[in-house]
Length: 418
Image 1 (tube, rainbow, N blue to C red):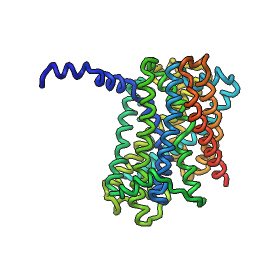
Image 2: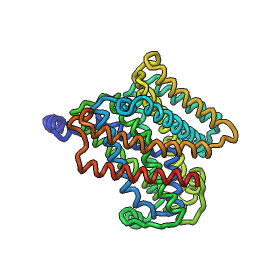
Image 3: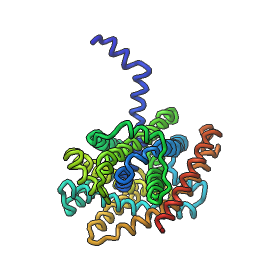
Image 4: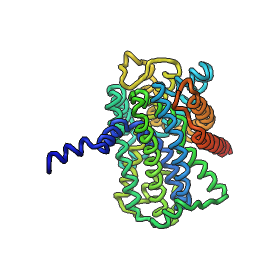
């Protein structure tokens, strides 16, 4: 190949933009896919297994909502260079920040327990007993963050993101009715039955969670993305939201094409993986289990990290993966303590996991309005954001998104109690 052609290609504006985007990419994609965690995958699997293609239409509005909220987090992180917890402390004071941090700590801990339950379940599908899967998971997650730097941790997270492709492959192996899936994606099929409405609330509730805003903003701030690269980071946030919901869409499609079509009753992800064997082949079942293990491990690292970022940011303590243990003892102590305690609890017999998850979901539901409202108050403060405040039209979209999300989150709490 002509050397001058290669030189011209490398120096072309399009190629340079791609290189710059790849350098900035990470926080948005990682946060988006981490939301496809154990609880999320269980919800998407049951949505496809119980309602077929009927709920695919929800992914378009959910993607728009997630993109709007994640973009604001990225913008605040780059413009201010601070995490969300630090900005809330400056805006609301120490008392309100302490309340939010404690609620986030409790909610994230309950959700982290669910991730370790997911690790245990997916490992058992693959033939790995709990007395092996738990210690190995703890050692890996401790080594990853405590011994790593931000760049090395991000590389591992991005590799884990690639493994989510297993769900897309599973979707193709299920041989779905693509025409029916496409129509259901753009034409809403709404039912007012109790089961349908509960699943609808569950889908939205698992897509947007308070921890995401804390993680993406802290991640961008620690990465020290310059304001000149803001446009690329916004693209990363939107891309992460799209990819996250695309993976979820394929999970619903795979279960709809196999389990729902054949009228098989399932109650959890283990049932789903086993049911795929005679319907879509052993490879589809293994890919589904591997994807579930990867998603659970991924989120089991992200959630404790979010807790450490938020609590230390809110209290003004040193934080960051690139810090040493001596520089940020509370940051790493919270991370390690959450992981070790979660693994120990899940390893105990007869753990009341449903009760723990119930309480954590209630905390998340209570916390979400506070977080989203403060996000909008901060991002519209010219003293903080300067020229990067929301435009009027963007505020209409953002406030509408926040109000709908809060309404559905409140409905989720009510249904949990009922």
